[in-house]
Image (cartoon, rainbow, N blue to C red; front, side):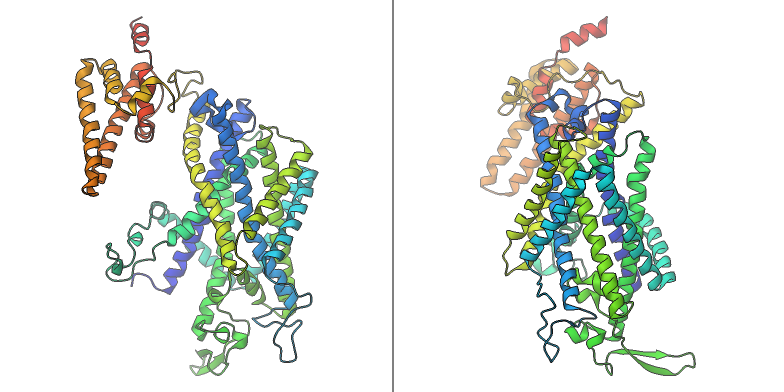
Amino acid sequence: YMFNDNTRAEHAMMVTWFHWGLHGWIPYVVVGALISILSYRRGFPMSMRFTMYPIIGELVYGPLGDMIEVLSILCTIFGVCTSLGLGAMQINKGLVRLDLGTYHGINRNGCDVAGQNCTGNTGMEVNRDTQCVIIVIITAMAVTSVILGLKAGIALLSQIAFILSFFILFAILFLDETWYILNALTSTLGYYIWYLPKISFHTDAWEELGKASDGLGGAPDGRGGLKGWMNGWTIFYWGWWISWGPFVGTFLARISKGRKLGPFIIASLVLPSFWSFVFTGIFGASQIRISRQAEAAGLDMSDSAHTYGSLADKDVIGWNTVGEDGITRWVPVGDNVVRLYNLATEDVVFEHMCYYGSFGFGTFMTVITLICVVLYFVTSSDSASYVVDILAANGLEEPPTIQKVFWGCTEGVAAIALLLSADEENPSAALNAVKAIPIILGLPFTFMLFWMCQALMIVCSEEAGKMAIERKNFRTWVFNLEIPSLISFVVPFVPAGQVAAKVWGGNPVVYMVGYASLWVTLIVFFCLTAADEAFLSLAAASYFVLSLAVGGMRTAVRHKLGITGDMISDAMVGVFAFPWAIGQMAVEEFTYNEKEVAM
């Protein structure tokens, strides 16, 4: 096989870095850099609507700008809600473990004589009610922090959380096999750099065909990946990252006044990615080693006794180890060894902490980890509240206090509503409800992010003097209500032929006939779909040919009229705004331009 257990481990680390590395931080950098330039160099308010100003101009002041603002606020609120929901589940589990005195799979507090039926010291349970209380507490702390302000509240909590995470990280590094982890980080970094171009374009194309037995052309050897894995991992993560774009991007812009673009990119893309590599690398490498240690001992995850070394049969579970003298000796599995893969997600980090020491040590590390997790979620919530305040106040950098309180409470209420929307008897439903939100909101914002990338390129070109800030544009926006646009929904070849004649010269009837032949072909193929669905694909192909032809004509119109732009944008406009693109070109004043050029 191409992969063995070692290369699989390295590949798993690399994929994790792919999810949490450069690709994840890019949306924040794009949004943050664009807002920073427009706010600090152009004087626009620090509002998401103005990120579209280089694309749609004065339309940002109308309903379209309002829609952008609303979408950004929703993305911020529900993006943070996802984190609050997941964080509440994690914190709830940690508190219950402390209450039960859980250590190496065994509960110690509130148990009967036989050590069973443990209720803990307080009877706390993992359920929605407890998680809702946790969200209320986090929200109260976040609101207090955001009232105190950027430096006294948000920054202070962030610094404390960061210091605690550093402490935990270095504790794991030195408690575990240090040289192994350092080597794993170095090796994975090289693998990540080498594999990055390939995985960046990987789409699970063959995996989406399913199993060979599905009859769609899945892998005959049965060794292909599972269908849907990318949707549950990569797409979810990126939806989550993108939905946080307005929040983190605006926050980065708010704290980056006076910085140049280069240092801004290093501080908000390179360094955070490196931090993600180190953090996930140390935890990932150590947990992979622990899991493999358990697997080699014979903990096959069939039950609790085959998950925890503390519950295992020491005469059966362990290793035949060859000593330095060449003699093979039986070494029973240690109580600390655990098959982490078989645990609930919320248990993994706490069992990991308990691996390295006694019950008291495990309790101490669990408390430190819980404090760190709580602080991180508080800082996420208070930062998000601060950003939503700015967006809702039309870019006002210091919004009213009452508004800060309102949005902070709104985030908590929304997170609670998501948790309560699931059935109490099906805990996974709550998780699925929480995970669905960033994907739903991330989709429309993805298209906005595309336009922001283009807007950032335009603004940077303007700032570098490669493009004039005041330059000629189309008279109308691409989505318009011009008469030629409405006509193009029915007979697009008429205005298209007229535009073509103005651009290239000649008889407009000839161009009309050409465009009409494509339009009629499309309609015929679509009608034939009633007889055979295969014709629908031919109709789609005809549409793309026609729309790309319109995109090409738009490029020619721009060149003739001296309008800036690029061919890719023209092609996208032709495909996704076909009738409006024709109308946009049809209302241009070609005659005036010809006189201007002649002069």
